Figure 1 (cartoon, one colour):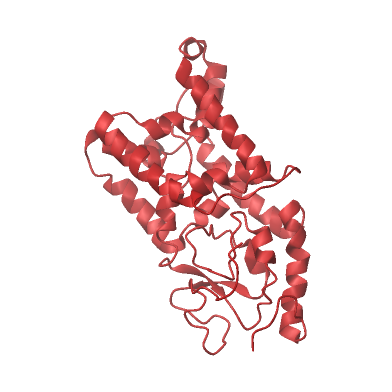
Figure 2: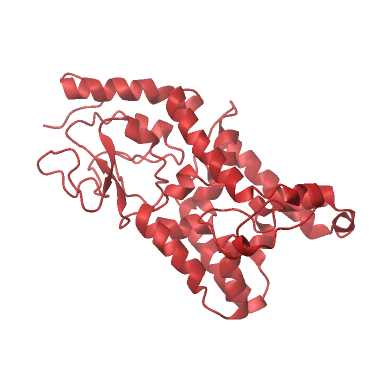
Length: 320
């Protein structure tokens, strides 16, 4: 028999409801302090460790050592003075512009995507971390249009592959707000010769960055959801990756609080394998949602659950 939202009559449901109530205020920036701190530690590590070349800022130099030949599965600018690794999107643009196949970069992303889906987006991405922090600013909040996530696939195909192949210009990197924040602004501040080269394109880049800063205050992760080509690649693996998000319909009360704490504003209980899901695992604080694998389709031990937790839509539940 279906249970209505807020029905906490049984013991398992009482546990589920009480847990989500404890997490409900997370949507406004508070909530479970331990879970909040753990996620911020991972995001901080994802920001600092790939950018640990402090000498770059001290001497206004760019690291060119052997690590620069490695692509991280993160959205992190190659040209940042402290960057130790390469950006996979920049690498794929380079190969597209030269008419070659980016076997190494594409293979790296495929392995990561097939293993964890978009988990690096939700737990390690530096630009995602910045957007999460900006959204904590207390003001009016809106919602991204439902059609907006399809734009990131257009950005991937046009700005990362097609346009660079036709023009030999890395247009996505030229306009990327992450590159402006972590590379463009620091280099302008450190180098007089670069300041002398500032032209109209730089101010276009500043405008794009400011636009996403404002959007990030008002909307949950607008860049990740509507523009990021790396997120577009990883989202293709969410339904088939080794790690999966499983949902237990027998204990779920349909309260919708998982959506309130979700950084991309989706209903994990409606479609756990959604391409939008960042696998940040915030929603797994509710006992009705759990991290699982493709080989363990019934992690709750409930009869008939297999398959329901991997993207099967629940009839009558709004996606919100």
